[in-house]
Length: 272
Image (cartoon, rainbow, N blue to C red; front, top):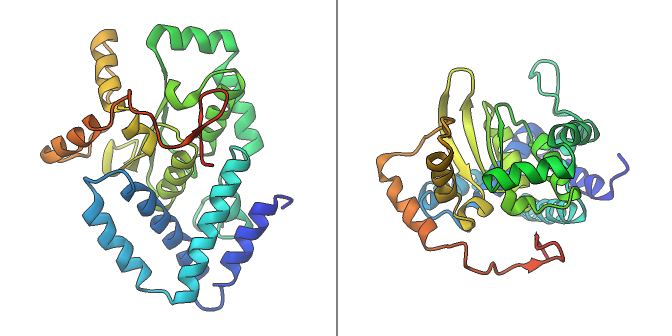
């Protein structure tokens, strides 16, 4: 464990070990962090998620809540340092994985190698984007999101801005894994819908839409893409009929809007 950010995050979580069950603490932190990020932009689910946030936080003392905020700061800085699976690494470093639960996340260096092979050369990526306008990735068992993070990094290294040329639909049966992936996708500004559900049975229970998905108007882009290309692939739908409220919320944030964040030379959004 030679990552200084990872060491800091693990040390912060370890301070909770003797007061609470560490597995529950990590899971609760992931859910609270995901809710905080979602409620900053997704007003449709705000009330339900805010109630859930208060329910979780009510279990902890003031010192632990302060630790939660410090962990969030370290995670943000880690993702700002470089794209990485910091939460998957934390899960393993805390030794929360075991054979009984069967949760072993793919090491990030291996994900990077696979992503480079999958993405192809700069020319191949360019042809895909030219044909469709953007790339689509669908991940049926997303885990902590390492494979998608690595794919975004590979696209960036090939000279393209994944923040407006990649859309992800990701699924996992484990809610904590969905929260982990959603946090990392949101911090890297990856347009994505992350679903809690069973990809094999095609049953989905909950959805999390990243800041980049909502700000980029991706609902409209994906619908237009299906009409133009005759794409029969379906994005799993967990939304009730009153989802029109969400569509109206997205309409208010158009592609022409300039984001209130910094941009680097490649045009990608930065956290700072």
